[in-house]
Image (tube, rainbow, N blue to C red; front, side, top):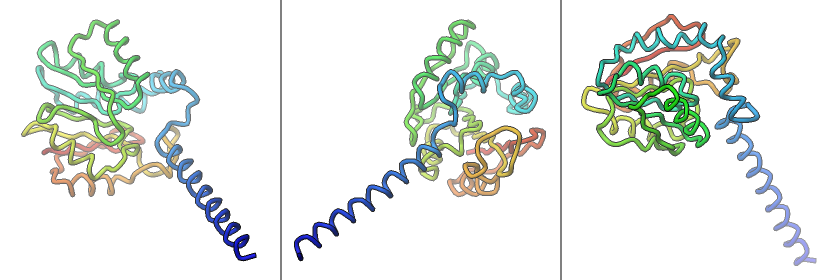
Amino acid sequence: MIIRRKNYLTIFVKVVFLFFAITASAEERHHNHSPFKSIAEYIQRMESPDRVEWQMPEKVVDYLAIKNGDTVADIGAGSGYFTVIFSKRVGDMGKVYAVDIEKDMIEYTKKRSQKEGLNNMNYILAKPDDPLLPKSSVDLIFICDTYHHIEKRDNYIKILKDVMKKDGRLVIVDFHAVNTPVGPPQNMRIPKEKTVKEILSAGFKAEAEYFFLPYQYFLIFSK
């Protein structure tokens, strides 16, 4: 009888452990992945014509004051929505890194840039916790609608600081932590105040904030 009770107890512990492992895995998948069924569907949404109305990509890039010859890293580049604009702004002497953790996204952006004749693009299939950018190589790091997906942000921000040049800048554009007509589920969003605190805690300085985007905060930090 004692042996049987021990066996039952062992089985019970294993079942409980498996339950929590599955639950944690499901939560992690919910946090790290988009709600779209396929990459093609995700790209279609990112490139939707109505996005221009609320994302205002050209105006956002105007406010970044990118110079000819700059090096820009677009982390979470996705379909290249902003990446191709950066490519045109930095010119032939500049360089743009399209950084994403999804191989299909990188391949899509590569084909898109080749089709548009953009020859200053570089592509990085990154890790969730490391953009794999060269150290001291980037003038501006741009993270749009991606900051809330980043794993181990405290360490990730330190890595960003290492890959930036001496006078480099970090740009965060992400959704306010309130209900909006577009954007991720509210429980995935990071309040602006928390984002600012995390970036400043890593040693960055607040440089500017702009308020023209209807659903997102737009923050610029300097190294």
